Length: 141
Image (tube, rainbow, N blue to C red; front, side, top):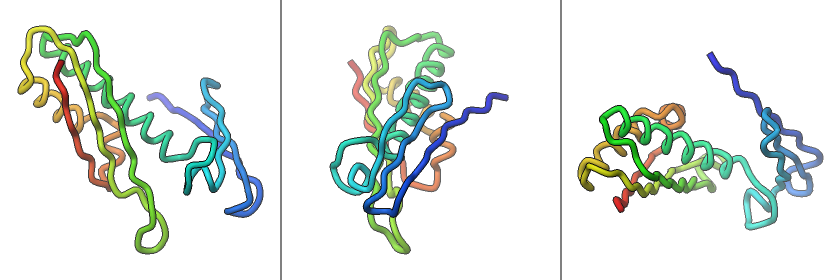
């Protein structure tokens, strides 16, 4: 079983402090702050990293499902939008919108939609994030 590790450090209070997040692989290290999370300030934030993880996992799952059905894709491109804001008791992620586009020889838009729905339900990150609504929009090219 694979174990993946990342780390974060925060210094200071919530609004005036700052932090860094670092992937265990060393592939990414970024600054984050109150303004990068709650406003449009420079730096990253946890929700952006969740969006990247979800888009990557979903794209891989969709590709795997299509290939297993005999239709390996030429291209899958997915964007994930994580909705974060005020909620009862503080702040919360309220929804994740997946938007995927694919080019898959040998199938039609309906088959692509069906495969994408399966990937949405079965990718490990989708399973981990089931506490929030996950929507899906597909575009077959």
